[in-house]
Image (cartoon, rainbow, N blue to C red; front, side):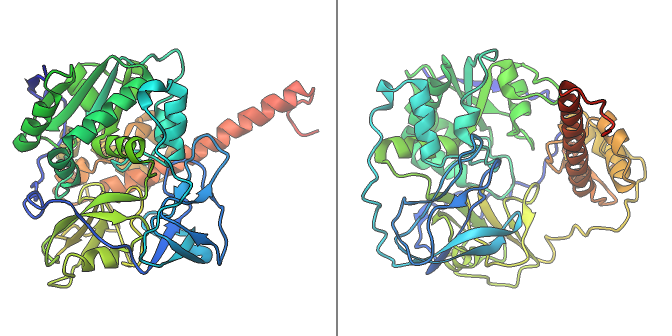
Length: 466
Ligand code: SF4
Ligand code: SF4
């Protein structure tokens, strides 16, 4: 029988930002039309960018592969509409600047690619087959991480998986897309969880939901009843949905520093990912649309929308009645981890969980040029990873890369709790992100140098280039 357990969250750190979910939590998911021209970036996942497999003038259909890669850590990209390819060229991306994109003129017929077929019963497939199908469907982590799901579901043999956690925590303020999926399609999510459990050979499945979503807990409990799948209510606290925090709260297992959940026998997937997996196995339709919460006080009719990928932010906002007041800021995602946009011509991509517009009063965090620290240690108390954010920010500002490594900057999950807690509004997370990227680049360079030196030694050289 599905069993709900209450856990007192003893995890260190975290903050309580206002939830602000009231704008959309009662709004059922509604389908919208794609833009008249859709923009499909060839990079919508972590890993190798896709190469376009179509050219100008080609006819495509909903579900046609328009880009792919031979690399293992990559997934294909599919058209979300039927129509003609009008251009293959760089176009602005919501996270990465200009990215090579396929532009498709939408004929508004949404004809499905005739080659698409439901993949067959997953119950009759082995784990390799399931993973291959998930790759073919272009599925990535839908909680924002966009890591290819087939890779996540294929851990090395030395890390057997016993538990899959389905993450329905959705602790980012304002966002309610996962909440609506749990309320409206609980059976689909459970089916997705079962498929994922089979792909990794896990015997246990847990669905984690924050205790500020009692309706979702009730609904999922009803559907999970008798299935052996556990429904766990988690104490509300940001960033409770972060993988490592969730594993600690639910299973009392600690992922090693710099490590991954598989090292403690766990895979964590977002409810949106489970939805995409189950949807593909029942219909054969790859990942071409996703639920997006369009919200914030400047939006006329904040809503949860099922949006065809490649639709512009401008058109998604228009489907919500447009702006009733000029926003000061528009963000992809939520206010804690979201990315500020400078144009609304960016497309909805696989990682777009929300489009958040903030008024001048709400977008009050200005970015000072130099951090001003009063040594209050609030950021230290707030950091769920046990880091010292004030030092990380200061060292990043002064480009002390070795110090950053010594202070475990790679463990930062970019949750933004430190910035939220800081009374002087230091841009801590922005500086830490910058420091993290630079130390990762330096590490990659030094790993390459070591590999090159090893290769020279193997060839009998002395490593000096002589
Ligand atoms: S240092 Fe990183 S993990 Fe710690 S609170 Fe700041 S953003 Fe979150
Ligand atoms: S919260 Fe801000 S002011 Fe306080 S120690 Fe951290 S960086 Fe300094």
